[in-house]
Length: 399
Length: 232
Image 1 (cartoon, each protein chain N blue to C red):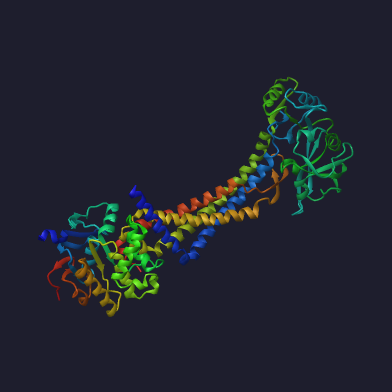
Image 2 (image 1 turned 180 degrees about the vertical axis):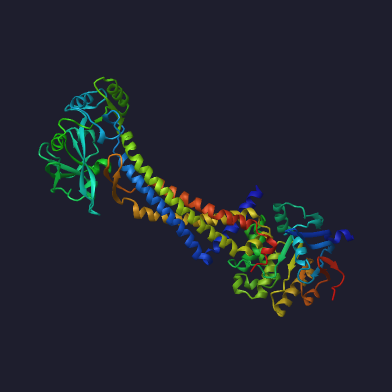
C-alpha cells in the first residue's frame, strides 16, 4: 500500500498547510463557521420544540395502559360513553384488578379559559374529571404540594405545567368552573407527561358543573400486562352492547401529537433549509476565497509533485472542519438556550393547551452536526474542484 | 560516453498551440532541442516567445500538442496526470521567479516539502534538508519564515528546495527576475556551481543577458521557434 500511504501523507501535509493559514483568514473563517452555527442552532432549537412536545405526549402512554372512547372518535372531546358502557369496559377481561376493584377510570374532559401568565391572553386549559382509581391507572402521577381533592367538595388538583403557564392555579387559589367555584388543593407531576397540563377533579363534580348527567367521554384502564391488550380490545369490540374504539394510550398520544409535531418539524425544516442555503453560500464564499488566496501555493505544491486528489480533499477537509466547529458551537448554544425551556402550545386535536419543556436530545445534536457537515461538504466541494483544476503553470506566477 | 548517452533532454518536433474561440494560437513550432547532462542552458527570448511554455513542457506542467519529449531516456509527455506528478517529484527541481515558498512554513520546512512525497524517514529528511541548506549557504536561516528572509535568501531557499531530492533536472524560470543585481549574482553563482561542481543539469529561462552569460549555452526563442540569433 505505498501508493495509498503516499496519498494520505500528501493529504495530511496539504491539510496541515491549509489549517496553518486559517489565522490569516480568521475573519472569513469565523463568519462562515458562525453562519453555519446559527443554522444549526435554529434547526436544533426548532426541532427541540417538536421533540419536547412529543415527549410530553408520549410520556403519558405506558404500554400496559389503554383508552376506550366511542367508536369513530379521534379525541375524547367528541366521545360519549354512558354509565352502562363504562361498567362493561371496567369489567372486561385483561383489565388489571386490585382488592378495591378494576383499575379503570371513567373520565370527563372539559375545556376552560384561563389567562396565560406570560401574555395575559386567554387560552384553553383542559380540566379532567377522574374516578377514584385514576391515581392507580396512571401511576406516574405524584402530588408535589397540597393534597388530593375530596370528591363532592369542588376541589381540584393542578398539573405542574398548567400551574406554571396559567394564572390562578396556585395551591390555595380559587377557580371559577362552570357554575361553581373550585378550590386548588394540590399540585402534581406526571413525569413531564400530558397530564401535567391538566386540572383534575372528581368526575361526578364535573358532570354536575357541566350538566353532563351520568355520561363520560373516556375510560382509562390499566391492563394486567401489555400483552393483555388484544384480549381486552377483542372482548370490547365483540360485545354487541358496546360501540367503542380501543387504543393503547401510547398510540392515542402519538396520534394526538402527530399534527403538532409534523407542523413544527416541517416549519423548522423549511426554516433551517432556507438558512442552510444561505450558509452554503457563506461557506462557498469562504472556501473560494481560501482557494483564491492560496492559488500560488496550491500550484506550487502541484508542481512539486503533490497530486490533485489530496488538494481536493484538503479543501473539503478544511470546509468540513469549519462547519463542524460552527455546528458544535450552534448545537451547544441551542442546548444551553433551549433545553428544558418551558412553554405551552395548542394541541390541535383536543383544542387545549399542552405545557411542555423543549428537549434538545443527543439525536437532535447529532442531526445538527450532520447538517453542519452537509453544509460544509456542499460549500467546500466546488472550491475544491476549482483548486484541483487550477492551471498549474499559469497559477505559479500569480501574485 | 557516447553522445546519445550524454544527452539528458531530447525534444523532437514539439509544437504547442491553444485554441481561443475559432482562432488557433501557435506558441511553439517545430522545436528540436537536446540538452547534455551537466549542461547549464539559458533559454532567452522576448515576452511571448514561448520560452516559459517550453520550460513548462520540460517540467511536465503542460503537454505538447505534437512531438515528443524524453528526459533521461524516458518519454514523459504522454504520462497521465498522477504518474506525471510522481515523475515531476522524482526528476524535476523547480526554481521560480517569485520563489513560491509557503509563507506559513520555515525555510527548512519549505525545503523539506518535496521529501514529504518520498518514503524517507524524518531523520533522513532532516539530514538532506540540512545538506541542501548548507549548499545554498542558508543553514543559519533554517528556522526563519520567508517573511524574515531577504529576496535573495528566499530564492536560495527555493533552490535548496529544488535540489533537496537530487533531481535529474533543474528548471529555473527567471530566477533572478525579482532580485537586485547583487542578490541575482549570488543566485547565478549558486546555479553555476551546482552545474559545474555538482554536475547538475540546469535549464534557465531569462530575459537578462547578464544572467545568460553565466550559462554554458544559450538558446534563443523567437515567435515560438528556435533561432540562431535574435532578430534586431
